[in-house]
Amino acid sequence: MKHRSSHRARAATAALLALAACSHEGAERPAPPPPKVTVIFPEARDVEDAEFFNGWTAAVDTVEVRSRVRGHIEKVNFTDGDIVKAGDLLFTLDARPFQADVDEATSKRKVFEAQLVAERKDLARLEELLGKGGASQKQVDKKDADVKALEAQIAATTSEIERLQLDVEFTKIASPIAGRASRAQLTEGNLVGAGGSDPVLTTVVSMDPIEVYFDVPERSLLRVRAETQRNDPGQLAEALRERKVPFEFGLETDDGYPRQGVLDFAENLVDSGTGTLRVRGTAPNTDGFLVAGSRVRVRLKAGKPVPSVLVPDVALVADQSLRYVLVVGPDEQVLRKDVRPGRLLEDGMRVVLPVAANKAEEAVLPTDRVIVEGLARARIHEPVEAVDQEGQPVPSRGPAHRPAGG
Picture 1 (cartoon, rainbow, N blue to C red):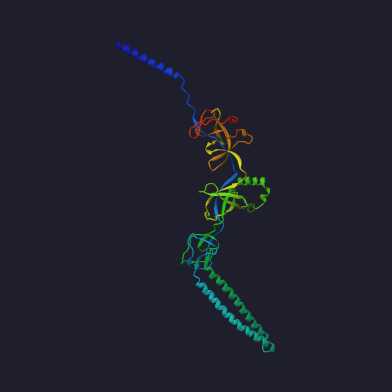
Picture 2: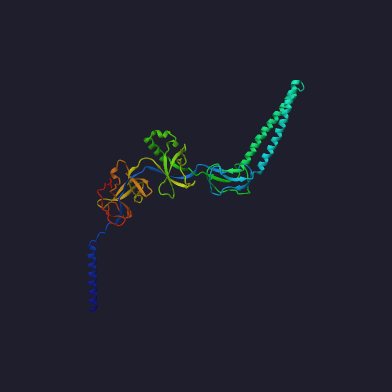
């Protein structure tokens, strides 16, 4: 009897639990809140129409200093890395063997000159005797030839002395240009030769001005030429040096493009392999801060500033061949706006343009709330909660244009 009562109590408890479970299942669960996304308002500003390139610096003049004569280095007259002027003495070679050759040739010329004096006197006597019948014309002609031969020998010896004196001068090796010298490749006591195959003693590179080289893609070249054709058609017929086109550049460590220069040369052919045209400009380097071979960033203005709408580059989403941004509409639902990406600025902002010029109504507006964080949580046509970087709500600034089909 007791066993049967216990069984009934357990059955009643199970029934009550089943009823409770059914009542919970029938009740509606509260909907989860919409996900939070961080938004910003696009920035409207005038963006300078410019082209950007990577380039490098180069010295206007580079000279490999070599010896013109063979000899031993007697003295190195500079310190490695010195700033030198044109004509500054760099190396001195032992000049004694060359001076000895000059002295020997000078002594030989003196002998010829003394012989010439005697031969001219003999010629004068024979010419006098010829008039009196005491000498023949043959004797006079032979003596005249001897005089001319000595004159020729003296002239040849004089030329030889001048050449040998040049060798003496070449023992003093000076810098042909102003600039910065490299290190001395050979020091005192070394034997140096003469000629292009012999070792370089040092290298001198000019410093002011300095050249900047960069390669312009053919598409950019055509765009700049088209812009020039619209603004000033006559400029295209002028040489680049005459047009004095300015450019700006900066080193890797510079903020922006603080340095200025002027273009002065462009190659006459587009490289078919790379599709680029090499361009050169010159820039002042009075303080010597710029070093040849440094990498630089170049900005070349292509037109007047253009009113533009910019968003952070992280806001752009790729969809196959299209790019788009997600915006929060006035009804707090996510909308998609297809865009055509423009230029990426150094501050991380990207110019965004309508996909087609005739669909300006689909363009991103400065009043749009563009999603920059939480893109993975945003679903098109689904509600979201728009907040700023501090987590504060961002209300709508006005009606947004709903893109067609969005």
